[in-house]
Length: 150
Image 1 (cartoon, helix red, strand yellow):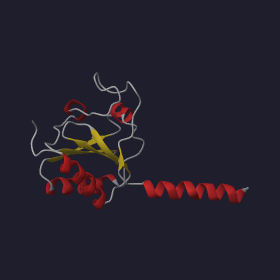
Image 2: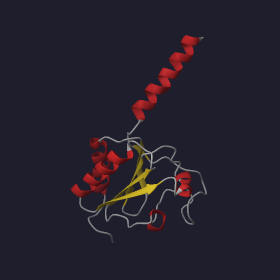
Image 3: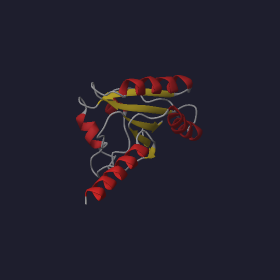
Image 4: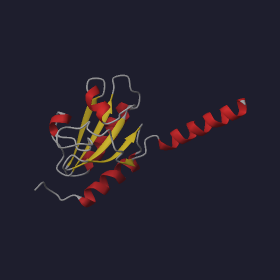
């Protein structure tokens, strides 16, 4: 019995490690949890973020004061945003914005969202993302986004 429990725990740990920091397509959130006109919470506004959206994309990082990986993730996102026109970075303290963290099902930090120019959530990653993954997620947004807002 102990061998089965250890094998199951190892499988769960291995699966979690594979997913950590990898971007996934937007995961639906609870119905009715978003602002009026946004029944599934899949669009974030400047009011939600407390900052302006990027012209073409926005990287949103949820962090906490005691998060070991949040500092390196912050630096990585800033570096990617500086290298791409029209990309903004917004950092949100999850402990101060529990309402938004709950709405978006943020259970660990760092959690990174990639938003389209209109604030719609395109991708998310929980855990420290790799630079190549962030660049790929941003590039996929920029390839489909016009250079300016209309």
